[in-house]
Length: 460
Image (cartoon, rainbow, N blue to C red; front, side, top):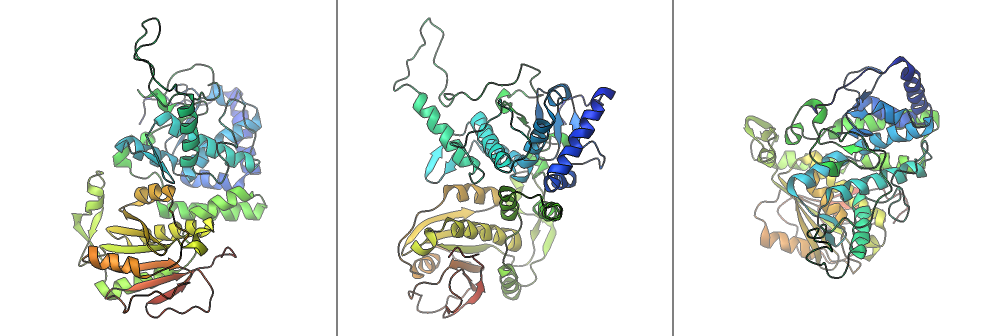
């Protein structure tokens, strides 16, 4: 646990805290429900931990801290906004994603742009997206010191897109040639990536208990996962499990809908975060069980996917599930509808969670293969998702099957997401199970394999 002293509120602030909690519950019962289900480790009413050892607020994916002098100097509606800002970081899994980049110094990728990782820019990008979502949902009131600019992020933006725009600003602010020494003999110029200045920070205060001031921004401090549990980030794993988050989000949706207080931007976010909508996983799981046995677990062996992260989880016993190939149709009829590309990524996450393969080979193909990615865990999929894909051509189903035959020895199953608008099939069915995730017209038929219809909500 961070060496931050947790203090009780003095009597003069208790009423302000009661008003804040009541205001949060009254205005956004859905977000409040999620807060109490996933961030209330003690099971009490306080929810927040108050400490004078940070400047503003802090969050590690599981616990919210607040400096009482800072928080209660804000008007009520801004306190509500500040609290839900931290809740949104939790829903969007920002602390885990930030740590993944910190741990491996992974570049930030958006579409086809790969950018050097910068902690402060990353944190600011996340704040821009969170604040845009809250502003568009009319949650509380934005403070002028906090990061908000619709030209950088809207509720539909990813933080990687916002990062790209901030990176562009920084690049544009850099001189064409950096001098080796600043005038006056003050040493070399500052490192790149620090060009565009954010809004002014809050008044000076104590830096949070970290040697990394880059993680403290104008609005909050992004603590590493496990901070509130006294664990190292890699030992803490994800703050909230996928199953726990789905339960919490479903309950939050019910609470919000019963009160009639679920703004469109939040409803869309909750819907995207909850488990995939279609039950094709049952078909896939059934085929895997028939083809490989029960697929139990061996508690005496560790799953090698997680050993390098110092996380122990039992390995699969028997033949297990090793490789699943997922093919995304990126032909013109699919590629022109961004919602369908996002749906394919969402369902790929479902394959990862339900079948738990050692790896997913994700292939994007129209008339030819456009992109291939090896997915080992949700973090890999997140990066791939933000890279996007190219496409827009015709449709041929043969290239992915040919590539698999030439490059993979053992394939447990292949899932092909497509609208079926092609007559170019392999001459014969492969010797592994195939599921067609169909997102087109109901009358279409496939020559072999199992078909699962995916609702498109009128987007195709």
